[in-house]
Structures are given as C-alpha cells and as structure tokens.
Length: 327
Image (cartoon, rainbow, N blue to C red):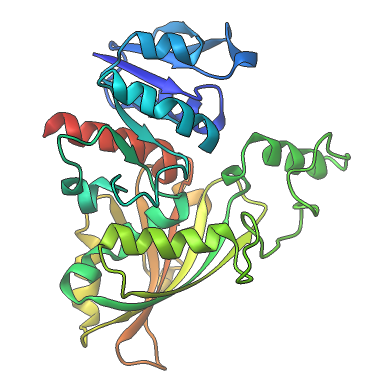
C-alpha cells in the first residue's frame, strides 16, 4: 500500500509519521511531500529515511491514501488532484470542514458518514475532536440541548513558530518571530484564530459549526470561549453540557468510561484529574472533574484534556484511514 503524507515536515506531519509507524504501517510505501523549500529534506521513518518530494510527484504515484497537514490553500489546490487519481484524502485543514458534501469525521462517532464515493474526508479541529468524543455517548443516550465550553489551548496548535516564541521568552530572549501579538510566557490571552464580526474568533466558531455537523444536530446551542496558554502538552476544556432528559450521574460515568478512545480519569479525593502532562504523547481523550451543575438539574460539568497534535490531529487522521481499511 502507498500512503502519502502531505505537509510532512510540520509539527503535525512529523507526528503523522510517528503514528503511522506505531500503528503498524512501518513497512508500507510512505511518500512524504511538502512545500518547495522542504524538497530534498530527509525524514526518519521506521528503519529508514524518506526524502521529501514535490506534491505533484506524490500525486503521480497514485497512493491509496493521502494524509494532509499542509494548510488550507494547499489542501484546496492539491486534495482534488489526489481525488481525481483515485486517492482517498484525509485533510487536517479547515478547507473542507463546512462543505456539506464532505464528511467531517471522528471515527468513533460517525465513520458511517463516509461512503464509497467520498474521496476527500475532513479531519475536525483539535478542540472539537476531544470535546465531541468525550460527550458523544451523552448525545446518543440523553440528547444534548446546549454546550458552554471554555478552552485552554496549547501553543502547539499554532505551530512551530509559537513553540519557538515560548522557548525564547523562557530563556529571557526576544523571539526572532512573534506568533502572537503578546508574550505567551507567564501569560494567556482569550484569542484563538481570526476575529469575526460577531466578536467571536474562528477557533470559537469552529466548535459551534463542527460539533453540530459531527452530531448531525443543528439545534444544539453552543457557546465557546478560546484561550491560548503557555502549554505544549495538549488542550484542556471546561465543558458544561445541558442534556435533553434528566440523567443519573453514575450512568453518565459509565457511558463516558466505556466510550472507545476515552479515559475517565476522575478521583478528586486523591487529586486525580486530567492535565496536559497527562495527555502528552497519548492518543486518548481524558475526562475528569465530572459533577452535577447545581444551577441546572439537567446539566453537568466536565474537564476534558487531549494531546492536540495526537488525537486532535495526527492520530484522528490515521484512525480514519484505519477505519476505512477495516471496513
């Protein structure tokens, strides 16, 4: 089998190679492609080195799958070209997520939305993936009427430039390039993505639009606030969920605990709750601080953490491919 990784030199692209190797694809033919400035670079994979090639060369190889983490513009340009030669594309950018004809997939929830005619599949935003997976069983069993979510998002979600900014600031140096309008070391700011006329940001709007699409329920009320924090291990989220029916908290715990890909990590008496350090380099979504909302009899609070480069991006994309191969 041939698998192309497009955008292979970035943070997520490199993690995709790591996950492919971990998931047993080390002996497959893997083609790594990236922008012109990266052509010829060597990337370690399994027991060998791979040479970065132009995207056109990867298309000409006609791989069965192309896993993209190359940005919106590159995805819009190249994903249809891969699709035309019969390749199934799993795209990590925002290019196709709102397209009603393209499935937006978290495989544990809605892999059945992918049909044989789909050649492009969208990978949701990192913050969306961990939230919807954590509450997917609640949506199925009780129905969800409203979600209020505040995120505490790792700088790795912005990319390598943000990591370098934080590292320079930690050393007391001026960064060569600022990923953010303010220092991030010993700071946080309520700003993720671009500003919209509504006063919300694109990162906040993604949580609204993508959650409704994945759950196939446009009636869910969703209010989101995104903050960027000086963390590298993963995204954290404070989630308040209002259900459509009265619930039993023990049943909620059981539902979350038995959701594939989710770990219930919740024992407050022993100070056990998820943190970015808990999720770093892990593929699971961790849930803790599970408790009733005393102001609303049908609502509950939970704390959700996941590695945004892993389950929030690379792992979810590879899992989509694996689910399609099994099917």
